[in-house]
Length: 359
Image (tube, rainbow, N blue to C red):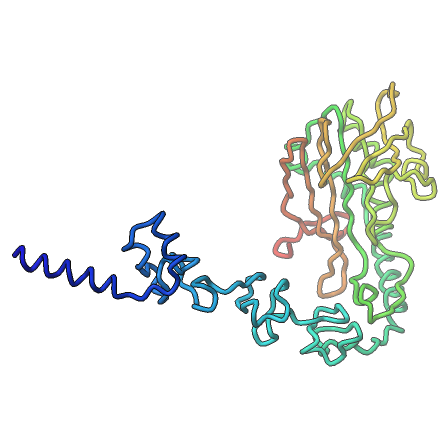
């Protein structure tokens, strides 16, 4: 048995010694740190011996000393074949990203009009201008028809329904600061006018302004004001088409308190995500210092508050009778918020009727 072991050791030594050492200097450097066996091994099986392999644990080609060829932008196209090695792109474009010269979201390779901003559904070419000559007249007619119905509705009664809503009474607790967040969103659908290819004039009036004025009459505002107790009411300005009158903006022409003779009101400022705006607000007592509040990401900072909003969306039944989807929303200083499920009301026979199944 010992004889066989000796023979095997001799053969193994001969085989190792028989391996051609192509770079004696590199081999000697390797021997200073590793054993002869390690220096003549090929752990990563790439055909390059350890002492010559610059990446001995990672298989790579001979032309790169046993290391993987670089792919700087990680797009799967090796730098040696990549025409844009710093910018990822598909192999079929030689490693370069597809161009979108006109920045319309349609890549030049698929864009029939690569130098002109266009629409994806028109092969990247501009859509023909839509004939919007009748939009103005249609919106005018719709507004006039809506206004006839709105004039017959009792919004004081509707406001009573809102104040007596169980969700309103449950959530509403007067606080040191009361932030009122108005949310009335009404008006015609944006059939055109928000599209760069459509140039449609809209009718100047929107039924949402009339609805707002009737729902938030001075009488109803004072009823709401009594609900707040000793709280300060700070309307939050919003700038959406269809909102109608703006609560609290400094411009007297659009200011609710000025136009409706509601007093006393005071001036303050709100830092709305970095944008400073002047506001009007209601306080049961004359403030000793100017009010300055900060709102970031729809949340007011460093004040105890409750936000309340009424969102109203006009809906029509099959006979064209208008009703409103009404949704109350609440949030507090801690960020807890709640949107009450919307309810659909129509004014019938001098009273508001909740219609089930249309929410």
